[in-house]
Image (cartoon, rainbow, N blue to C red):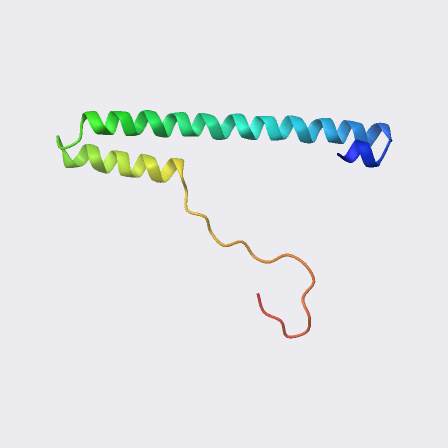
Length: 83
């Protein structure tokens, strides 16, 4: 992508690093999905036994999928403009 537009050595290295980071992110996302699947399978087995166990599963799910917080807007703001 970047190296196809810019033919410098640095552009090629940056492009390779971007691809490595993308692959690592994809790997991390798939591992989280595997953990969540295992938790759901375990939850089905102990469903109805104890409220404390259900509470543990609820908290574990919150840790795996933290809520998305709105990010502050970045960039140029006109006079008087608020986020």
